[in-house]
Amino acid sequence: MRLIIMGPPGAGKGTQAKFIAEHFKIPAISTGDIFRANVTKGTPLGLEAKRYMDAGDYVPDEVTNLMVRNRIDEPDAEPGFLLDGYPRTLSQVEELDGMIKFTGHQLDAVVVLTVDQDEIVSRLLQRAQVEGRADDTEDVIRRRQELYTEQTEPLIEVYRDRGLLVEVDGMGEVDDVTRRVFAALDVIPQS
Image 1: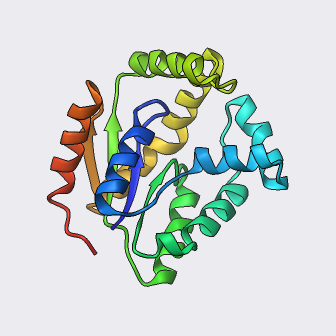
Image 2: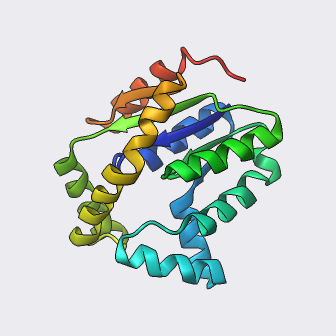
């Protein structure tokens, strides 16, 4: 199963990705985690990514694409994967299409979590306090929301046109959202 989970920052993608990945026995690949790991290790890609992350901007495609390509080429991703935070731009959609086509597979579904914007800001500010995330200030959060609207929402239409889109209400308790996600994915044939 090859899946993407989308939604604005703070929609609960990371939380739901863990449940989905465990259910399908595939790795959940989060670009945020990949970026933070590279920043923590002080890699050249990580240092470059940090400049953009600290400003609330997206990391450039060339850096992101390389990190994702390296990750989905790892052996645990051979039977499938769940991407969280990638693709974010139309050019990344094209890059991912090439990556998947190269392996002889196809994308099975794109799950989009829909959540109220004020709820998202509240969630992310709370997460910043709990986890001590310096990159989650209110200004940065609002900037990410703007970028999502401008750059990522158009991807939803691309995947809708391809018949891959599965929209799920991301509001409410985690368990309720998880049930809705699995109910929606039950109708998706696995490749």
